[in-house]
Length: 289
Ligand SMILES: O=C(O)CCC(=O)C(=O)O
Image (tube, rainbow, N blue to C red):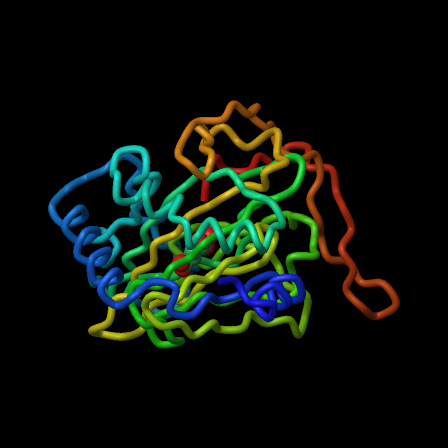
């Protein structure tokens, strides 16, 4: 059941966490399933992250192999793995998405982050920058497969940023992030860590600024199973997210969106940061996050 306080938090902060939505046994099953799929095998779309770029003169670093090389992120598993497809359209997930959005969404993406000890995080970003849903936006269901805290790189969110337009991106610090783009935050605005237990599912708006810091533990993974969805009134989504599925797994025909024509930059007005929209022009959004 979706509670009134979950809906209220989603509307106010841009996210909510459904605590204990999946049982310990179910989570153990998913962990074992995805570790078996990962170990010793390659899958389409595996992503180890961008190379680390260090600024000249920055402190030297040890040459430890990047743990993501052994545990690349998996993407779009639902296109070849039935367990992933079934989880993406699972009735508990659908019930939450539908209650929070007010109408049933379409399903477009699955991802599995292994985030082993020592792995980089993902710099803060907005999912709608990639999905380019028109009209409306996207939404994520992010299920913790391990207990997540600041040490192992839990998700971090900028509460309330779901009301922002899509920001123009800047270069990320690739010593901390396995992707190379991020969004600038106004001075004094910091992301908040979301502490979760395995089996909790966080639902968040596609415009919410979110990301994660590195896993600084030496012995704890921070695995998460993620679904991305788009609002039911959407008519277009970026090409990478096709085929689009109804929540019963059947395909739906939508157009390919070319992307927005503007993105936001922070400017100061009367001493406060306000977002000003700029024509995108030559700024081409990467195909996917
Ligand atoms: O799990 C993370 O560290 C980031 C996940 C993310 O950005 C997403 O699900 O859109």
